[in-house]
Image 1 (tube, one colour):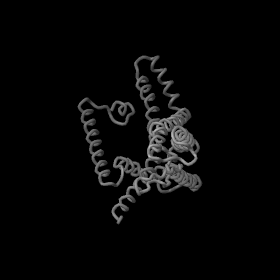
Image 2 (cartoon, one colour; image 1 turned 90 degrees about the horizontal axis):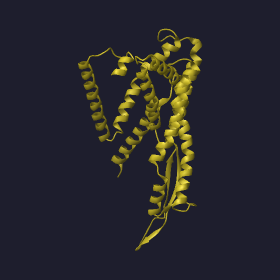
Image 3 (tube, helix red, strand yellow; image 1 turned 135 degrees about the vertical axis):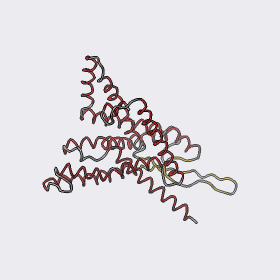
Image 4 (cartoon, helix red, strand yellow; image 1 turned 30 degrees about the horizontal axis):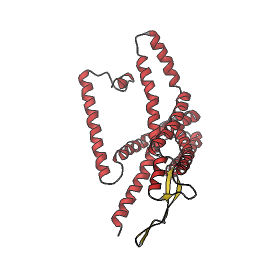
Length: 300
């Protein structure tokens, strides 16, 4: 509430009005969580993600109108004909970016895995081949969320100090705030943090030693690789290589709005960021959930 008041988003509130607003926000959050759990229970998909997806998609019409008004430099729906190539170029870039997000989100490196034959009594088990999928983007949108949290925290602290009554602290805080709020510093820091958090989250969620141990216990092996430590090193090597591509792509998507604003000079002509990744991920996951439900209900 204090941050919103200082930014001018809401008028100054007394203590009682703040309590009412906090209660309303908390109640709304609980209702949204309840709706998300209902969606998840009915097997449609991740309910919370679908609600976030709905909030992002609902802002698309107003965003399109804002783009047309800003680019056209006149009242909607009239557009300056000389700016039509800019709009067409933006649409083409948007389609290519969305296609790239889909490809990277669904991209994976299959590691062949074979199971040794085991004879128990009169029956033979194993002897089959499958694969271990290593996704290019193991982390999803989590690195971008972490990076945003890290970037916003110093700005919030310095913003509080900038309101200090001490002149020296206020001047230093304003200088630091102006530096960290610059577009080039924000873009570079954002890209680096997303890149690092992608590797960090992938290392936390995917343990090559554990995977190698589980394969060895199940009598499985990677053809041409000895079980145990060599398999773990092989998986780590492959994962490091494909995560490099995923980390670079996530960093590029994160700073793409900043790049588009710098190239076009129009704040409305932006694409990329967390919203695009969430929309694409939710659509792909929902399609998989619906297909799984259809297969489960029609399977004989």
